[in-house]
Amino acid sequence: MSQNTWTTFMLDITEPLTHYLNIPELAKSLTELELEPRVFAFQLLGEGLMIAVLKYLPLTQQINLLQAMDAFELMGVLDMMEAGDRSQLMASLPDEVISQLMTKLKEKFERNLYLLFNN
Image: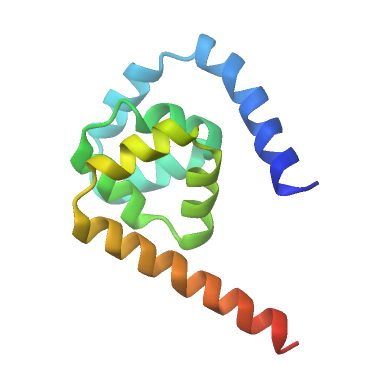
């Protein structure tokens, strides 16, 4: 399944779930957890629900969760976000955080290129 097809599939199944789940309440529940369990619970949501919940979290918690993701997860979440939501999120992040996230993505990209051309 191509990445674009997978993204569409995830968004298609996430949309109905958001009608059955109280996303703001789920986000509030996450804010009550310590960082490590919060990150784990956030990862269990899957990319589609991560995006829905992320919008309801305070900026500091959005930053903590994004920084805790590995590059693969981070790329998946950013890729699945609508362009406007992604732009709004990036505009709200401090420059230092954006730099850290971009470094993480760059390292993953460079690692993938190395594996691609050296195998």
